[in-house]
Length: 418
Image 1 (cartoon, rainbow, N blue to C red):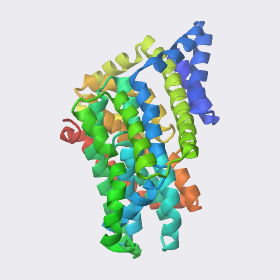
Image 2: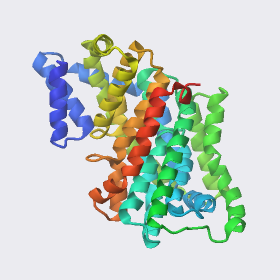
Image 3: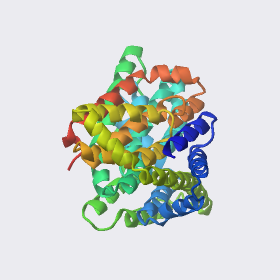
Image 4: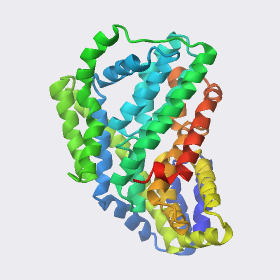
């Protein structure tokens, strides 16, 4: 039954059927051909929606949307320009610093690519950046957001693998900073080679001094989230609700740039993003039921342990599979499909599930700026008004950085285990 399901699933994907619909189509066809009751689909669609930790996803998305509906993005860009604007290619570095800061607010690479891309890519082109390179910086650096807490992919991985979301959040900080630091070096190298301009903040520290205090309440949101979780004050779901209240207070009372229309737009955007993620979660639950019913994860783990003698070879094989899958599936769908399967394999070789989760998110995030389905790649190319091929060529240094960071996370457990 699982073989039928997989073939139909990939066949529907090849016909450009949306991922969630392809999942359901594969499961429905397999059940029908095997004479199994279709009621299984309805039962499995309903089951994952009853998870209390799942509520953290829409609330964290809403908190980010509320915060970014006003002036916070302007403050964020200006603060980043003060720190890195004097470097060659300073505006490119601003994209990376902005992604690190933005990740602590939104937890979404797509939101990061859209918000910062619209703010920075047109200005970068005006200052002489090649359009392909500007788009490459934005599409790659936005993936730092999926590692800096609160990270939506890490929440999804924690839900499907029964791993502590708090531990995943804390473990994601260092890899996120490593990825951002590596991309910072890549931009600096290209900027030196191509003699890209400096872009210091007008007014220097005097302008910064006023803005840092204005932006500080928003910049403290990730500190608030991590601190509350780390000291056991609240669960991730409770913290997500507190983050919404915090965002409403900062934007509505301190910044005073959030009106009822802004709240409505943030709520609508959150509903659309949550609906897309939840549909994939529900559909992936049906596939997981089929695989579990046929003991595919357990049998695969036994086969891997018997066939591949060295754990490092298993880790390389897992990374290779994830790189391929990530190029064709969106990050949430890939995490939900591969998470339960790979956790079983990881346990067979003694791989810590937190380390595996960071491996998975870093690996699959590369697919966000890799053809043919790269979401941040297409968003950035559209903003820059350049061809995909031009952007992919400029992305080569960023691919190298991401692979280096991925290998470090895969083979140096101390970077992700606390």
